[in-house]
Length: 197
Image: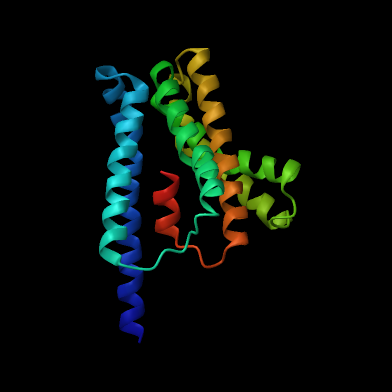
């Protein structure tokens, strides 16, 4: 049993490293992509690739559908805030802002989620001192990581505004997803993401 636990943890760490490698370089890759093609086209292309990947997974898993036709409009609306709007704003905003600022805004999503939760969705989960402390620690971590680069936050105001809006759209999408999953405990995560994409 102990060996299996170590193997499981090792797999989780490897997944985290792989995810960090892809995620960490994605803003730089976006910056290069939009230098060659229009931002919305690049965002759409990224979503088409992601959707194709998720559809292949769903096809090969052969699990029964967990999202009913009646649920689809809510899932699609959630996808608009979780994926559609944020990715459009990301690809448009990063054109006029630095990759560093983009990373900071992406890292600020938990802050915006917390603020939206306080204002509109307190019934979803309790706001505890521990969660607030966790939020402050996370933001402190972002500042520590990006502090050496704070002088390189250049870029236009338009790009920065779009990226702040991106972070807020992601935050609203997070809360909408929480409401969606509270309403349906049986919903499959991959099917949900595929339908939102």
